[in-house]
Figure: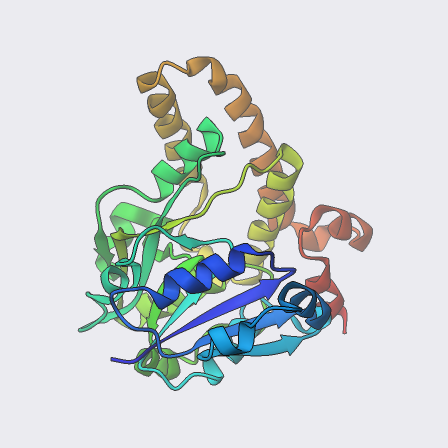
Length: 310
């Protein structure tokens, strides 16, 4: 099966070269690597004076303007440049943990499995709270999720992450692909559609990327505001399964995680962080009642609202 990799870029730095090198050295060969780059000048500044075209002959660079970027639309556009049977969507800050990432990510991508996503490991600079969050969302055990898991898992049934995920092209085309205009959650929206159509989503714990962020409380608020907006805009998916129960599980899981590591003194700070997250989420869920000025201050995706206005 031919595999292509699609990576949206914005202001890339030198770690892009490391990412490309690690993709080139996977145990499963990559066909093409398609870079959907926002802002041509940033890419040209990075690659000026290098042998980029010669060294990375299978890399295709597609430039777009900032106002063109969309979480779902840009990735779908990248898919259209690929003819591969399987395509992997990756973010520029997700680094393969080893040479078997693609092998492990795609080994169960058959039968009724439409998409598989990788486990995200924290980097060396990650805070203990970020480690607890990653441990909660990306456990050590793999799982294949179907419609039958909705009662047990709730919203987590639809959980999927385009930080690193592999898709079967035949099912992608059957389902119509990623939603073309969305502020966030294009991966979960697609996963929900796949599960509703009788397909499955596979979490591959042995396929691992290093990816983490130490967000401030206000960054968490903005991120969760956009999360709330995406759920408000898609009640056909998210109205049936509540997200709040997952928040409660995260609190309990983080308490246990910190207790095992004898760092419970960090729990009050975690509770403050949760307050910012929940406030952002609630504001996003009810964004239609807010003045647009507030929306633009709360969102982490101002360009989305400009596109939406147009």
